[in-house]
Length: 610
Image (cartoon, rainbow, N blue to C red; front, side, top):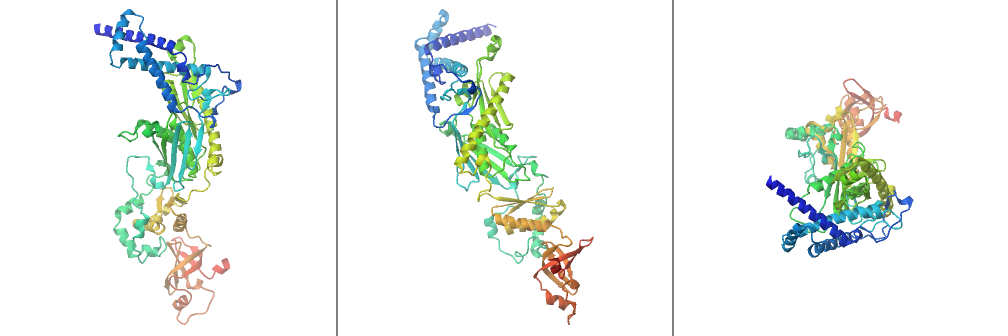
């Protein structure tokens, strides 16, 4: 009990010293602390039309840089520390001796006291300048504008990197600057949501360089999925020696739907040099960087097109090159521009802004009934440190897509509702400015924040073929032989889903188009009354066997060969050999498909159909 009583007495004495020291320093410092937040000694008169308007500070009116403000804050701290050492003496005679002993000692107690006084001075100065004078530390506002509702100057560079990068942009807001890049990948690059920690490796992926070293076989010239290829010894050996490949190929698209695959990734990097520090040993992402990246990713994910329309896997990286507050919201703006530069048709452009609060002690304000708090748009690092909250809000013109609230004390719901309205006005102002700047920087390619109409030449191409799910085995083939033949022939990768979708991914647009035609032939059905291009693969005495659509065979009877009714001296076999030869390309008409799937063809009726 004696120790507890003595501890309480010590805390009371320390609190009294802090309060007396604060009042003394506040009287000696004058308006020096206020000048750190834009006060110039003059009362400002705001017009009624500018009270609730959010605007962007003009680029041609430079603001005070972060380094200058930092030096001024340090000068104020140095003055506080000098005043505490040279001029301040507690009024209580009992505390006077203890304080003088602390001054004589070099234990760092005076420095700690100076930091506490400095923090209280700047917090009070932030509240007074914001609520009474509507000024900011970086000299925002002016010309009758409410500095609390002014966003720092914006600048945009898009594209920021060569065209070998699928999409890139630099977005700067004051001292905060981010470089964002967007990369388009194959659908199989996504991560299955059911188990995101499981390593997924596509066993069918093959590099172009490795394919070029594979010797050509006698069946390389046969059409993809041809029955002649599947009946060959080469396909048989492939089936016997690739049980594992067969099992994995048949499980292609095992998630069941593209909606269960994570297709969008945003990686946020906050290097030490962005705040003027020397990089340390650890360069791995910390919890802050991971959280900021997750917030920006959530803000953009809902605007991406559905996988049925845009099946790419998208990865966005954000490199913070300079930071002075709201780097996560700058990432949202920069990533939006990078996605547009990559040609991704997002639903609406997204922007983000951070809302701060300059306030005193909420308990004292609630007891006294005096609420002197003031909301700030686009806060800097200093305002975040001495303010009461950091409310990050990202969204489109129509609504909010992501938000995050960091508070130091409890807030009233009315303040949050007012902050949401202010954030909406700030987003719209940023989007208006982004639209103008991106149009100028891109030469009209990103007009009105619309995506690039055509993907860059370096971007891969994806094609979608929808088919009957029961025909999936025709695309896989025995042991995955058809899949591998498609990939080897056209240099593409395939992904099949259980719903009957085939996604073709490749770097060469022409080869992707040819692969798409081949897949459509493999999953198509022969329809009675249609004319098809066929290949003669076998000649019989009663007619010829014709290969259609790569993997189907039909009978061309000798009676349907031509209108010539004269008999041949060597019989029907000679008549068929007179008109056809093995490997010949001909056009035939499907005249019937029976219940067993047997196809009947005619050549003599083709001219009549034409």
